[in-house]
Image (cartoon, rainbow, N blue to C red; front, side, top):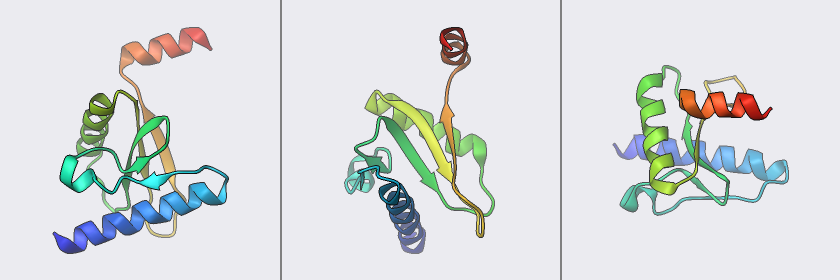
Length: 104
């Protein structure tokens, strides 16, 4: 469990630093382990970060939705496998997606 937390923290720092290099100011949510919550603060999204070779997408999406609901923000999931770039998916329900499509 300690190694998994260390790996998760390293992924969060890596992602945070990538955003900062692109001019986006944000910080890791340091109370997430104690209080629960998304991984990065100061963003308009409840962002969950995963750095895994094999991801359980349904479980990750469930976690992202739960954190988004708790925070009142739009959920987003960022993930990266070794030697690949970060990918970010914003999580919508079908109703939210339909409304977005109508507005665009």
